[in-house]
Image (cartoon, rainbow, N blue to C red; front, side):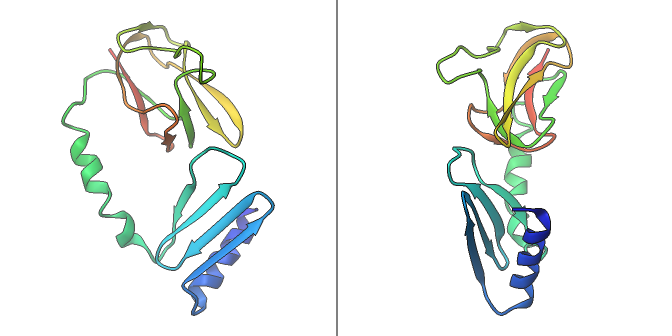
Length: 155
């Protein structure tokens, strides 16, 4: 489903009296809730739904931000941070039964593959942008990640 079609659907929900709209096209399913979020899920994939807040829902996303911000400073080791270069699903290894690319305390060199982010059914190898030792792994295997989200802290 293309972006223009999604925009038209969002406009339709905002301008009409309906509170919720759900459309299925092949393996794609879109659910738009007025004052809520837009979920787009490929039915055959195991990835988490993508969320795009509607313009009418700033209050819905605001309460979730403070707990995340408050939790981060508590146990934040110092050092270079490797951030997600894209939105997708984080994987520590090439396959479920393979060993992780890196472990806590392991030395890595700049350019070493440290994880994979799956985006749109493509597996993207993420490389360390600095050399050092893995001090912290901030994301769980299989967890969805956002662009710029910290993944690792190196030391």
